[in-house]
Image (cartoon, rainbow, N blue to C red; front, side, top):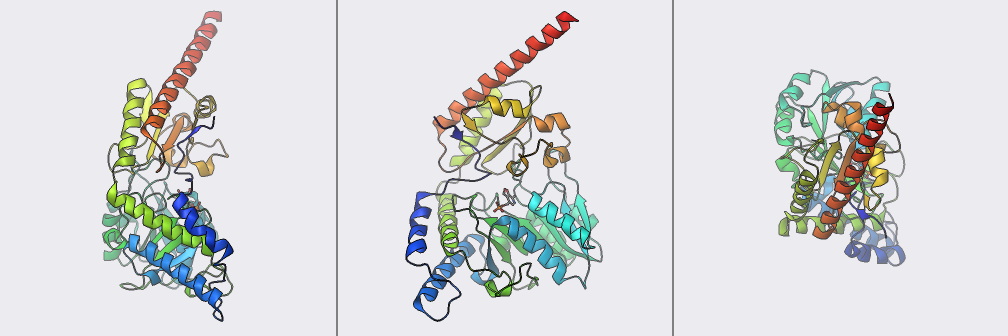
Amino acid sequence: MRPIYMDNAATTSVDPRVVAAMLPVFSESYGNAASRNHAFGWEAEELVEIARREVASVLGCEARELVFTSGATESDNLALKGVLRAYSSKGRHLITTKVEHPAVLDAATALERDGMDVTRLRVDSEGRVAPEDVAGAIREDTVLVSIIHGNNETGVVQDVPSIASVCRERGVLLHTDATQSFGKIPTDVRALGCDLLSLSGHKIHGPKGVGALFIRRRNPRVRIEPILDGGGHEGGVRSGTANVPGIVGLGVAARLASEELESDPHRIATLLERLERGIRERLPDGVLWNTPESGRLPHILNFSVTGVEGEALLLAMRNVAVSSGSACASASLEPSHVLLALGRSPAEARAALRFSLGRFNTEEEVDRVIDEVGTVVGTLRAARARHRTGRDGGA
Ligand SMILES: Cc1ncc(COP(=O)(O)O)c(C=O)c1O
């Protein structure tokens, strides 16, 4: 039997309604959206524009403020590198945080290699950035602040509107990585107050390899330099033949997510609370909660089981698919930079598990997972205690 999938922050299954919308685009509406000379091209372009309007309506922005990309990694890179390069005569300073996704952290490091200056803000013990710290870090030459909206490891949600007020007052642009929050909590760009926002298709039951970047067009109009050279697609901002099936899938996935957000906003949050309650009951001691109790995303629960190695725990939990730390970094056993920034020790960070729910998880699955975690931790702890007793006894 396949394990229960609770790794939806890593990726999600594609909703069958999204698949159904995409299929005809592969074999029938397969034109190049940039082909202006025939109906195949016009049809593909029309599909792209419908999807652009669908995503724009979830963000509360204009369709022309959206650029389709290959995913949030590209959107983050485009936002940081594109803006810093476009404003290099104004300044060379970028402010971000210690709890960003590697797509932002590593883009910032690349910019440093190009001679830009980067400030990485600390966070409190729940992983939040203080708007005052942002204010304190802004300098004459600051161009951009980039702050993750909902954290992919712990689920903590940053106070983007307050940070946006600080940035606006000081004439600095704000980018937010909303990859985990888009479709899960409101991400209206006017309410958030951000100037740029990244999102991705495959976190919302859409396809992989497609995402978008919101780039504000007025008040202020954000300038951005392309990071890919080529045919000048997407208004010259992102060259490369449009991934029409992917874009169609993203549009439908965004629409479905926003419909679900309106009709059933608490279903996943309620399941997550059930999971948390169950784990608390089964493991009353020795658990460090890395996800705060409030101000969090509805689908991510992260905790460290002390006295047990996260990897050993994962290996033993055969019936549930979850992550230890961030999926993106799970190829390495390095402790999570996000959990270290919260003040966790390397051992505590290594013992972290991230459960993330999606549209298709059920109450029954949650109950089975609670049982699995309780049993596996109990067994590992007992084995450890036996090992200790044996060692002490032999000494
Ligand atoms: C917060 C965040 N930003 C960026 C990304 C990268 O997204 P993509 O896989 O679409 O490149 C992810 C995915 O793990 C993420 O969670």
